[in-house]
Image 1 (cartoon, one colour):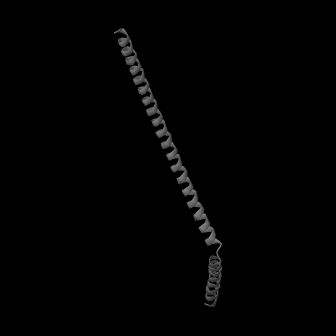
Image 2 (image 1 turned 120 degrees about the vertical axis):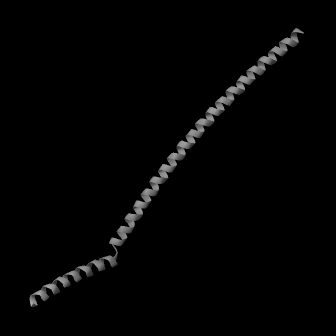
Image 3 (image 1 turned 45 degrees about the horizontal axis):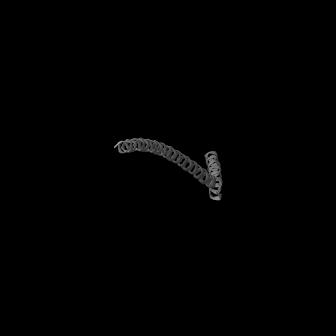
Length: 101
């Protein structure tokens, strides 16, 4: 009958329309997923770069701190003073020894 054919034709059109809408939604979902993945990779790379910079700065600060502690320590100051006094004493002793010869 004519009504059944029209109903079948409408059902085919609706099915075709639903299929194309479904394909479009799948395509958009795939594009969104690709963009999200790319954004996540970019953010991860940026995080790695910033972490490496932070580690480098921390290492530099640690080295500076250690050098500053060593140079300002009383033991190093005492060793330097004793070394200078020893060098002066050695120079005077050599000079005195040479003058007695």
